[in-house]
Amino acid sequence: MIALILAVAVSLFLSLFATPLLIKFLVKHQLGQFIRQDGPESHFTKRGTPTMGGVIIVISTIVGYASAALWMYIHQGRFPKVSGLLVLGLMFFMGLVGFVDDLAKIRTKQSLGLTARAKIIWQLIIGVVFAILCNSFPNSDGIFPASNHISFINDISVSFDFAGKTLGTILFIIWVNLIISAWTNAVNLTDGLDGLATGVSLFSFSAYVAICFWEFTHSCHLVSESANVCYSVRDPWDLALIAGAITGACLGFLWWNAAPAKIFMGDTGSFALGGAFAALSILSHTQLLAVIIGGVFVLECVSDIIQVGCFKLTHKRVFKMAPIHHHFELKGWAEVNVVIRFWIISALCAGIAVLLFYGGWLQGLVFD
Image (cartoon, rainbow, N blue to C red; front, side, top):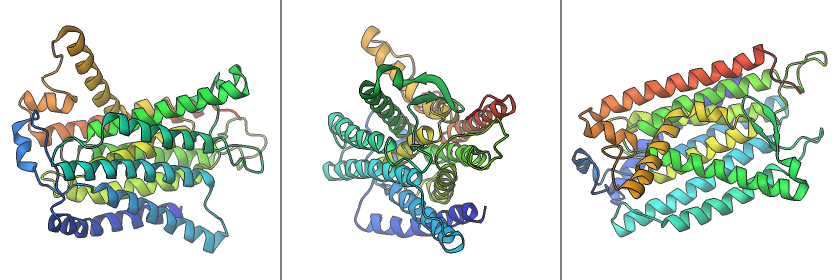
C-alpha cells in the first residue's frame, strides 16, 4: 500500500509543480494551440494557449511508477514486472506520436497536424509490437501478460484459439489494435474543452486503481488453494501502481488545465492516456468493462461517428456539432457546465463499472 501511495503522491507532486515550468517554456518559445475555425466562437480566445502539456503527464507517470518500484526493490527486493513496463511503453510511444502531431500543428500554424494515414500507420506499428509482446515473456507459471480471451470482468469463453495457433495470434493482434485505436482516438476527441479529458481520465484511471488492486488482493497466486474465486491476471499490482501514477499526474495537471486553462494536454496527452487506458483494459482482462469505465470517451467517439455517417448518407447533421460536447455548447450551455456535467457522468460510469466488477466477484463469476 505504501508503494501505491508513493506512486500517486510523487506523480501528483511532479505534475502540479512542474507544469508551470513547462508553461513558461512553451510561452517563451511560442508553442501554442491553434483552434479549428469551424468550432464555437468562444474558443477563438484560446488561440496561442500553450499545448503539449501531455509531456508532463507522461513524465510524471513514469517517475511516479519508478519511485514506487524503487521503494519495493529497496524494501522487498522486488523488480518491476513486465506488464507494468508494457503499459508504460504503449503510453510513451503513443504519446510520442501525439507529440509529433502537436509539433506539426505548431509548425504549419494550423489545427491539423499529421495526416490521418500517418497516424494510423504509426498506431498500427506500435499496436502490433505491443500485441506481440503481450504474448511473450511468460512467468514461472507459464502465464503471459495478456490472454487470448475476450474479457469483461475477467476472461469469458470467447477465445481466439479456436482458429488455431497462427490464425488465433493474428486475430488477437487485430483485436488489440482495434482496442488501442478506439481508445486513443476516443480520448483525443474528448480533449476539446478546458479540463474535460483530464477530469474524465482522472475518474477512469481511479476506477482501474480499485479494480487492479482488488485483482491483486484476490490473485490466484496469493489466495489459498481452497479458494474458488480468484483472478489469473499476470501482474495486477504493477497495473494498480501505474493506474495510480496516472491518476496523480492527471490530478496535478488538472490544476492548470481547468477553466480557464493555462495549458492544454494536446495530442501528446490524449494519445498517451488513450494508449495507457487501452493497455490497462487488455492486461487487467477487462476489455469490455472498459466501455463502461470510459463511458464519456465512448459517448464522444460515437457522437462523432454518428455525425459523420449521417452527414455522408443524408447530408443532414444529427448534432449541432460533433463531438457531442460542442453540441451542448452551441445549445447555450456554458463551457464549465458542460465539463462539470461530463465529469459527473464519468464518475457515475466509473462507479457503476467498479460495482459490476465487485458484483461479479460476489456472484462467483471469476474463476481460475
